[in-house]
Image (cartoon, rainbow, N blue to C red):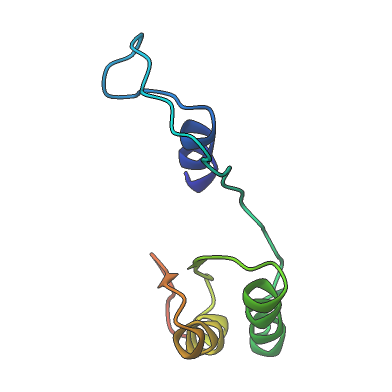
Length: 93
């Protein structure tokens, strides 16, 4: 879903009124999606979150299924002032 949204934005697709061009925005930057594999490990998720924020310069992080990874990665995001969005992260019992 995120990749579809980025594609719509990057290609200036008008989903509200198909067939009508949207006004061009000068200097508009292209969005991109950077995917990583945390392998279900909290320490890997923490390291990847730090790398994405400091090296890839991402503007937001989109969740992890594992609650242990969500816990560590969201803490990194919060300290850095980066939004962390997560739709589903069940607790391990």
